[in-house]
Image 1 (spheres, rainbow, N blue to C red):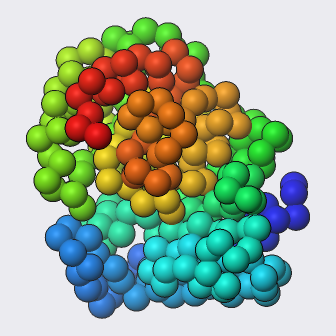
Image 2 (cartoon, helix red, strand yellow):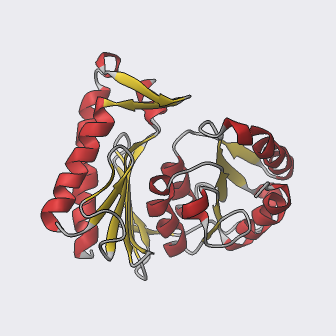
Length: 265
């Protein structure tokens, strides 16, 4: 395992332990609202702090881009390395006791994703990837699915709850993809959904309105598992636009073909 990946795994497991302890008494947690349908808990903040402490101790000069604290440690752009962190992707699921959430940690070097960890603490599933070295689930090599026909494919998605003004645009895509696939699933934790594409559990995924920390680690997992990741045009701008499509190569191409004409931008 690459040393930087090893540090990220240690940080993700530390955050997962905090999350699992809190899940025993989730009704006692203090919950605040950042905006419509977007919540944050003391667990998000504690898990993020634990991750940042471990990363800082190992790499004090690296930049951090984290969901709750923003850019820290030199600010993104002042270091060749930037860690992109979501300490608890799926907070709404977590506070409702719905066991679909994860810790997501990605690392960019000069703007290129090079390390990725997604850890599901409820199932103890650890997804990892290093650029050029493949993707793994609990140290077992994973690959995207081999399905080629969209009408046989299971596709993941997420509703644009942060950008409700995009709902009509999204519903057009949802209608077309639902009509052309074997099924569409919305579990509520984008990082895990993307990891499931890498593991072949989903054949593809798309969503509007994501942040870099929702996508970074998962995108590398999919690429290292043999899949493709892009924006709604199939290009590389997904981290900036928040609009992502991913899947095995055949399904990715078909999803982009459907989504691109329906995309407003």
